[in-house]
Structures are given as structure tokens and as C-alpha cells.
Length: 462
Ligand code: ADP
Ligand code: MG
Image 1 (cartoon, rainbow, N blue to C red):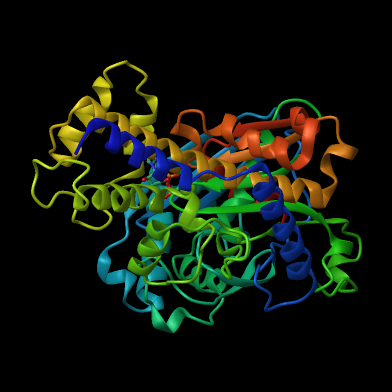
Image 2: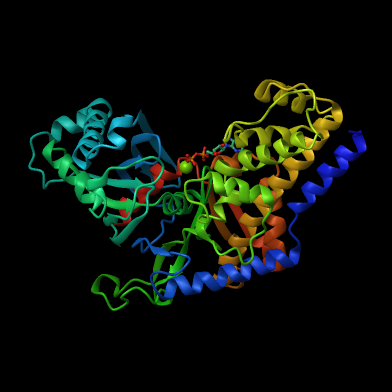
């Protein structure tokens, strides 16, 4: 295979990941349409889950809170002290959830979680704890925010029933139960002075955390996750959420509510999202083909696998790595951090790409092969960032955010955003396509320790 045909092929593949300005605008328009539908009634393609968080912090909040985070592999317990000036101190412990508890009973899982909270309090907050030890349980001294990244049907700030487990969990008797009550019950059995005050999705936590720490007077309107998965939560007016019982007493004096969009499942119908044969192949490898179609083009769990699929095809057609037999055959073996490292290499000989492909894939390369890999990586990474920008732009258009605010602040959490070179710049290209010159009003900041601080803030406003 000649060098030029390899690079021609790679260029043409990379082009398949291009998205035009018109397409981006079409994507944002469809996103806005589904957003509106999701606010009107349940059972719509975009879930648009009300969080029951009805206020956002401004940085002056003070106090000490506990937060726990049950995500995928780890359980984190932390205490957060909010200093009231946009800064905080955070103490944290992390424990791996034993595999057996992920598929056992609710009692086993939640008593394990409570025990970890107990250990944390005894280890890190001992003095204060001793003072309070023995007090009746109703004298709760710590408010706890519970970050729980599984689908729940939330009915109040600290009430939510589990719809289904994901990410390898299968604790059957917890489905349909209120996860806050399950945790509170076990905390009470240990006589811990802790009140589960808020149930928090990680996007909502990110929004709250950024809103607390963002500089100046500006309000943070959007919290975005760009990590293993992708999702967004934003500040909506209560009046716009038709599906809420607006007349409910609890909402009578509330003007805003944070909405968790669950945008990972945007356009599962594939009306506007771009589609390549490699996307389809990756989709079929997942346990939920046809679902989370937006997420499968954007987030860290999938970008490495899309790259593997493309490189594998180039190899099978004889363009790439012809000297190696059966490389790249293991599904999910390329981590998305590889794309970041390839993207970062701007040396003429692509020396970093050389060492990455050699070390991570065990393959020697020629310069044209490295150039081909880089072209494809750039296509996949750029598409991810443009898509993220298009839906963020869609939310801002829906909110008319740039018309009514001099600065529009957005908080983001996740390794893809944090580490992928040039990701924000590419996101801004799409934002500009969707919202025009107002793009310059948008300020984007990383929400460090977002889930812990965000859960604490939700516990505070609860
Ligand atoms: P989580 O989503 O579990 O909260 P992260 O925000 O760290 O965790 O996201 C993890 C995802 O980010 C994984 O899919 C991983 O492949 C990807 N990732 C990790 N490091 C990088 C990096 N340097 N560049 C791009 N993606 C990365
Ligand atoms: Mg995260």
C-alpha cells in the first residue's frame, strides 16, 4: 500500500467525522424541541428530570456538611467545610465497593455504605463526634448530600426511588425503593448523627459546585459532565416545567428548579446525529444498542473504542500495520486518554504518537501510519467537542441566556473536558455556530471536586 493511499484513506475517514455548521444548528434545534417536550410530560425521549433543587448558591454559603458518592466502582465519603467566600476545605476517603455487594441485597449494600460513613466520622471528625455521641438520633448534626448516579424517580429533594441499576450493579430488592430512606435507616441503626438531606445527580452537583466557586456576581446556569458519560443540568424556571404540579405547596414560592436533562439519550431516533459505520459497530457491542446515542458519540467510555474500530478496519484493508498480525482485536482496549496524548503531539515526526502506539498497542509504526492515526483521532475528538457545544448552545438558546446576562457561567466536570487538548476551543466553535457572537459572553470553568461540594450545597439548600 502506498503512503499516499494510506493518507488519502485516513483523510477521507476523518472527513466522515466532520460536522457542518448547518448540521450543528440542526442538532441544536432538535435538542431544543425535545427539551421542550420533556418539560411538558413524562415518558418523552428526553427525560428532563426535576431535581427539586430550587436555589443555586452564590459563594457566601457556610457550614460543614457530609457528602457520599455512589457512582460506579468507588464509594466516596467526604466532609466539606464551606468557608463562605467561594472556597472550601474537603476531606475525603474512597473505598472500592466489593463485587459481592453490587449484586447482593439492599440491606447488605446500604449497611456497608453506612458503616463507611461511621468509620469516616470516627476517623476524621472524632472530637466533634464524641461531643454528640449518645444524643438521640433526631438531634441530627450533620446534613448529608447523597450523590447517586443511577436513574431515580425523584419526588423531593431527599426522596427518590430507584428506577433501575446500571454499570454492573444488580441489587434487585432495591429497585422501586427510596434510596435515601434505605441509607437513612442504616445510619440510624448505627445511631449516627446524620440526616440524609439531599439526593443529588452528579450534573446537578457540578452546577451547584461551580455556582458556589465561580468568580463575581454571575449566576452559573449549566452544569456539564464530560467524563465516562455525558450529561447536563441547568437552571429552569418552575413555570416552564409543565409536568410538575406547580401548585404543590412545596413549590408555591419557588421560581427556579434545576433540571437534569439526561442528554446522553438525546436523539436515540438518530434524526440529526451524525452516524458512521464505526459508530454502529460500537453501538452493537454495548449492552444497550440504540440507547444513549448522543453519549456514544461524545463521552470517554466510547471515543477510544470508536478509534479502535477505525484502526482495525484500516488494518484489515491492508492500509495500517500490515506487518502485525491481528492487532487491535480486543473490544474496549483503547482508553480515551490515548486520543488526548495523540492529539497533544505536534512534533514533525510524531514522536509521542510513536511511543504511544508502541507501548499501548505493541505496534511499531512508520511516519505515515502515525500521521494517519493522528488524522483519525482529530476527527473523532473534534466531533465529540462540537456535539457537546451544540447541545450546550441549545440549552442557552432555550433559556435566552445570552440576551439576559452579561456573563453566562458554565461548570464542567470530567476528564474528557479537562484533559483533551483544545476541547473547549472546539466546543466554542459549535457554540458560536449555534448562538453567534454572544458566544463571547460564555465563561466555562472546571468544577473541581464537584460531586462532593455540590452534594454539600444541595444538603444546605435543602
Ligand atoms: P467519571 O466519569 O467516572 O467521574 P472521569 O471524569 O475521570 O471519571 O472520566 C473518565 C473517562 O475519561 C474515561 O472514559 C476515560 O477513558 C476518560 N479519560 C481519562 N483520562 C483522559 C484523558 N487524559 N483524556 C481524555 N479522556 C480521558
Ligand atoms: Mg465524575
